[in-house]
Image (cartoon, rainbow, N blue to C red; front, side, top):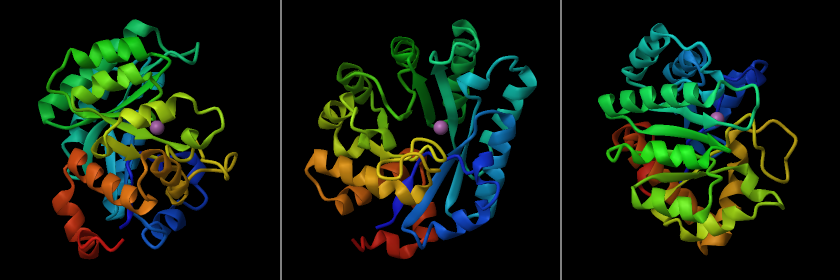
Length: 270
Ligand code: NI
């Protein structure tokens, strides 16, 4: 069963020298699908153009909280238009980031987050949420929208927060940091997360797992995340690969697209 990397930024400048080579090598490297989320209008467009070129790549369009200063109506219109395109499967990444002092003020981040949540609901798309050091506000905001579906990307909140989100149908994303020695909360969160709500993500080019920490990340390093998480969950890495593949298809509405892409993926060749 191939791997579904539900969060990788192949539009990033880090892939400028060899983007085509890396993307072309993914299927043979065991990676069957990728979602590339945008961070602003330009990168959302770039993500879509990659998705249009590579059958195994899908895009999300959105404005990242770190990039939302000076966001205009024209930007929201552009994101809406991108979200209507066939290969755009989510609104993202959107959310709150209180980590960087230079980020836009909290009220601006919240307004832009809510506008994009409303867009997702309007277009019946899931959202990809970025929540860094903003757990209380992120939770408060998403709970205002009972119909909202999506994933908390690289989830770093408490088990209590995870429990609330899981009850509301959310998926949780697990990334390279779960392989770091200081990962304390992640095993506790993983323990209470049902297998059918787990997604695995690289956040490439960032968050490279051990033993490649420090290098540029790409989707072919996801087995290190899958192995760590599988051990915590008491399943094999192969089982978790198959389960997270199905989870990604379900959340992003790609069941039909995936079977057309790779008929063998359906037969469950583990
Ligand atoms: Ni990201």
